[in-house]
Length: 80
Image (cartoon, rainbow, N blue to C red; front, side, top):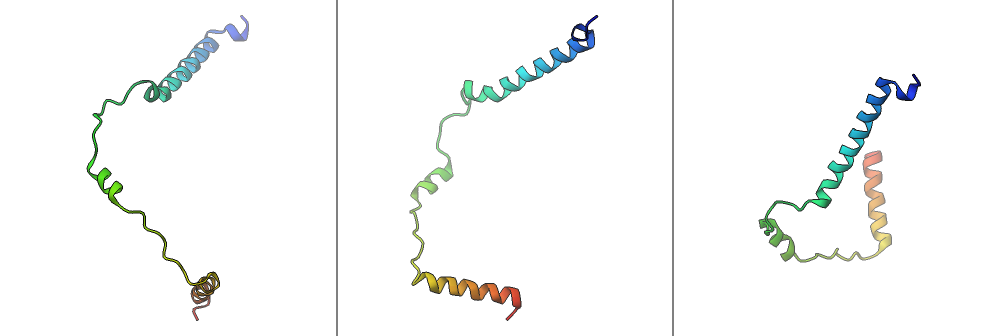
């Protein structure tokens, strides 16, 4: 009997094929079936919408900010 037609080879191939098909169905199911949850707004949705977008405070100068950051870096590295 050729190796491709051996009973163990056929069962392995069918097991692999069925597992692959099942994996594609599980991954594709949420895209095909609608979500059963009712469409409603949750409590935190309003809070997110009402928040205004805060802008970052403007810094005086980029060089000053870099200098301050470098001083902090030196403080943590050398303990000065």
